Length: 580
Image 1 (cartoon, one colour):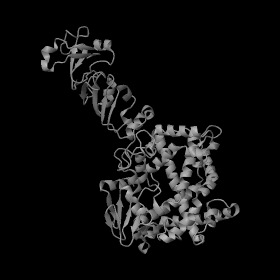
Image 2 (cartoon, one colour):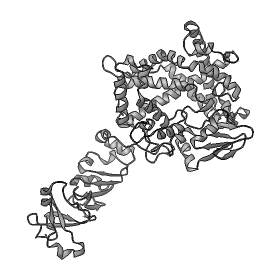
Image 3 (cartoon, one colour):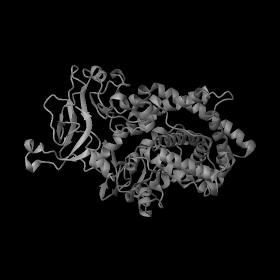
Image 4 (cartoon, one colour):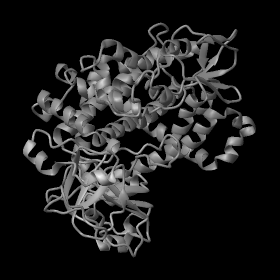
């Protein structure tokens, strides 16, 4: 998905990605030309592939019929209805909190107990059914002669099971609604079109139930998982949102909808940024041009052509989101440093996780309620961090992966300290620079992808050479920090090399002089004495420490005039204090 979405950028602002489909990464002011009220576009015919028994608000093509259905369904998502659902949502959040806790003996609750096997089986049925639906949405011509039945026999079986499940839910929901008069089903069964006074029929209720179950669970859970993922990978954001929630609410019982929740501005920013980074519906929501065609961004599009803007693509367009692949909740808050209302308005103009216009997600308000309550409760009750080792790598990109998954994140200090081999392997590092002490803890078998190993920062050991000379291109680097990172280098260190061989000068000249009288006595070749360094890489001295500077940075010795031309002669040399 990522690669396909990002290919829109490489092909320009518009890309024809199928026989009758155009994907446009347009200016946000043109989004309304496709998706808003009164435009010459309708829901694309391909959505008919998703119809089970009767079209619902997601799949119905006709604008008038959609308006009728939406007027009825929207009554179940009013502010009053959302407030009435709050106790039910809080009950589910409490169950999630319980599953995240330990038992009475301090043991973690097994993850396989989080969801009963019956629920997992139902989710698998939905997944299998969606394989067919997802394909038909992109290639509706496969319904010709019912080719889809031949291509997707398992998906057809799963669809039939899903319809049976919907019928079961519908019966139970209506029965419970008749007793309590509360809940979504109570609202929907009693709701009527304000204009025609007609309610939804049983087939229509079944169709809407299918949409509510899939769209109301998978999308919210995706956004919740994304929020946990990005917060665990961005410690500063995690600490800030946790501090905000724990300062606004003083107990779990206080965490409800209302003025206090409205104060949690950074929480809302984290939710929006997570949905921007990983939108639940990431691809194009297709619209078909009606009679006489339409003009989008000065381009005429004839009738009968499917047009859409890929949500993932526009959410990662740097024109609207600087550093689009970085998690920055601050981009949604206007009073942040270096932020102005115009920056936030620009970001909002391209923010499209629920679509816009008459076909936008009717459950947007409910999704925000669920996400705010769930995240606030979890962040108030628990501390969490990214797992170390393989588990902490789940969901991340890596160098060399497919386009769109090729951006590994920078490892945290904790990972470098506790799982350095894992970090090196995760980012597919082939060239590494380590100290001899550290590399002594990493045998070649643990980091097989390393092809070039540079050692520096301390004296190389014989064991380092013995172990790594034949396993990599080994480089021995020497360079006091006061001079430069590197002053000498020996590349391709053979197994027979001495650990004391530091190679050749690098952008510098090195000399061996008498430790006791460096200013007057240059040592002969092969003599062992103090190493001196001079050249353009040399620093001017120690900051605010004249005594230390005078001791180590000595005037150029007289013997330099014999070996170095006057025009190239330095004024000072550095006494390293090292024997060579």
